[in-house]
Image 1 (cartoon, rainbow, N blue to C red):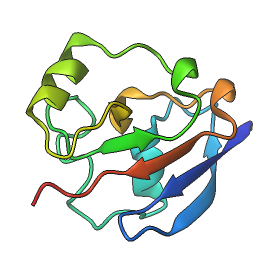
Image 2 (image 1 turned 90 degrees about the vertical axis):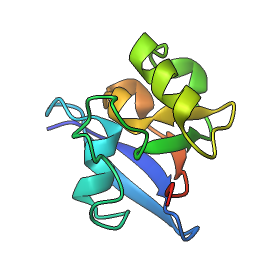
Image 3 (image 1 turned 180 degrees about the vertical axis):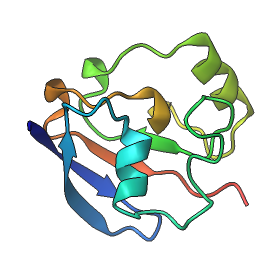
Image 4 (image 1 turned 90 degrees about the horizontal axis):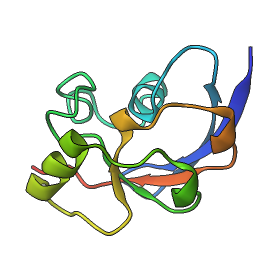
Length: 111
Protein backbone atom coordinates (compact mmCIF):
# COMPACT_ATOMS: atom_id res chain seq x y z
CA UNK A 1 0.00 0.00 0.00
CA UNK A 2 1.35 3.40 -0.98
CA UNK A 3 0.20 6.51 0.87
CA UNK A 4 0.87 10.21 0.40
CA UNK A 5 0.65 12.88 3.09
CA UNK A 6 -1.92 15.60 2.45
CA UNK A 7 -2.74 18.54 4.72
CA UNK A 8 -6.44 19.41 4.75
CA UNK A 9 -7.65 22.52 6.54
CA UNK A 10 -11.25 22.02 7.64
CA UNK A 11 -13.99 24.65 7.67
CA UNK A 12 -13.10 25.63 11.24
CA UNK A 13 -9.49 26.36 10.22
CA UNK A 14 -7.91 23.31 11.83
CA UNK A 15 -5.17 21.59 9.81
CA UNK A 16 -5.17 17.80 9.54
CA UNK A 17 -2.20 15.93 8.06
CA UNK A 18 -3.67 12.71 6.69
CA UNK A 19 -2.50 9.60 4.86
CA UNK A 20 -4.16 9.19 1.46
CA UNK A 21 -3.78 5.87 -0.36
CA UNK A 22 -2.62 6.00 -3.97
CA UNK A 23 -3.56 2.40 -4.69
CA UNK A 24 -7.32 2.53 -4.02
CA UNK A 25 -8.48 4.77 -6.90
CA UNK A 26 -9.72 7.41 -4.47
CA UNK A 27 -10.20 11.12 -5.02
CA UNK A 28 -9.60 13.96 -2.58
CA UNK A 29 -13.30 14.28 -1.72
CA UNK A 30 -13.38 10.63 -0.64
CA UNK A 31 -10.33 11.18 1.56
CA UNK A 32 -11.97 14.19 3.20
CA UNK A 33 -15.12 12.15 3.83
CA UNK A 34 -13.22 9.12 5.12
CA UNK A 35 -11.50 11.29 7.76
CA UNK A 36 -14.83 13.02 8.56
CA UNK A 37 -13.30 16.48 8.06
CA UNK A 38 -16.61 18.05 7.03
CA UNK A 39 -20.04 17.62 8.58
CA UNK A 40 -22.05 14.71 7.17
CA UNK A 41 -24.19 15.80 4.26
CA UNK A 42 -22.15 18.93 3.50
CA UNK A 43 -19.52 17.52 1.15
CA UNK A 44 -19.82 15.26 -1.86
CA UNK A 45 -23.59 15.51 -2.01
CA UNK A 46 -23.67 14.34 -5.66
CA UNK A 47 -21.39 11.41 -4.89
CA UNK A 48 -18.40 12.77 -6.77
CA UNK A 49 -19.99 13.26 -10.18
CA UNK A 50 -19.06 16.99 -10.53
CA UNK A 51 -22.78 17.81 -10.38
CA UNK A 52 -22.63 20.00 -7.29
CA UNK A 53 -19.94 22.14 -5.74
CA UNK A 54 -20.25 20.91 -2.17
CA UNK A 55 -16.71 19.49 -2.30
CA UNK A 56 -15.06 22.72 -3.42
CA UNK A 57 -11.64 23.30 -1.94
CA UNK A 58 -8.79 25.75 -2.36
CA UNK A 59 -5.45 24.41 -3.54
CA UNK A 60 -2.74 26.05 -1.45
CA UNK A 61 0.24 24.49 -3.28
CA UNK A 62 1.01 22.01 -6.06
CA UNK A 63 -1.65 23.56 -8.31
CA UNK A 64 0.53 22.81 -11.31
CA UNK A 65 0.61 19.09 -10.44
CA UNK A 66 -3.15 18.61 -10.68
CA UNK A 67 -5.07 17.48 -13.75
CA UNK A 68 -6.64 20.29 -15.75
CA UNK A 69 -10.22 21.23 -14.96
CA UNK A 70 -12.74 19.46 -17.15
CA UNK A 71 -15.79 21.12 -18.67
CA UNK A 72 -18.10 19.74 -15.96
CA UNK A 73 -15.86 21.05 -13.19
CA UNK A 74 -15.60 24.49 -14.82
CA UNK A 75 -19.40 24.62 -15.20
CA UNK A 76 -19.99 23.75 -11.54
CA UNK A 77 -17.44 26.26 -10.30
CA UNK A 78 -19.13 28.94 -12.42
CA UNK A 79 -22.29 28.33 -10.35
CA UNK A 80 -20.65 27.89 -6.94
CA UNK A 81 -20.33 30.29 -4.03
CA UNK A 82 -16.99 31.43 -2.56
CA UNK A 83 -15.02 30.60 -5.74
CA UNK A 84 -11.40 31.76 -5.85
CA UNK A 85 -8.70 31.43 -8.49
CA UNK A 86 -7.38 28.30 -6.77
CA UNK A 87 -10.80 26.63 -6.40
CA UNK A 88 -11.19 23.01 -7.45
CA UNK A 89 -13.78 20.30 -6.91
CA UNK A 90 -12.06 17.76 -4.69
CA UNK A 91 -13.99 14.94 -6.37
CA UNK A 92 -12.06 15.70 -9.57
CA UNK A 93 -8.61 15.29 -7.98
CA UNK A 94 -7.42 11.68 -8.02
CA UNK A 95 -4.96 10.68 -5.32
CA UNK A 96 -1.60 10.03 -6.95
CA UNK A 97 1.98 9.82 -5.71
CA UNK A 98 2.63 13.28 -7.16
CA UNK A 99 0.32 14.81 -4.55
CA UNK A 100 2.57 14.02 -1.60
CA UNK A 101 2.69 17.23 0.45
CA UNK A 102 -0.47 18.74 -1.08
CA UNK A 103 -2.19 21.37 1.06
CA UNK A 104 -5.86 22.27 0.61
CA UNK A 105 -8.52 24.21 2.48
CA UNK A 106 -12.16 23.11 2.33
CA UNK A 107 -14.35 25.93 1.02
CA UNK A 108 -17.20 27.21 3.22
CA UNK A 109 -20.51 25.39 2.90
CA UNK A 110 -22.87 27.18 0.53
CA UNK A 111 -25.68 27.24 3.11
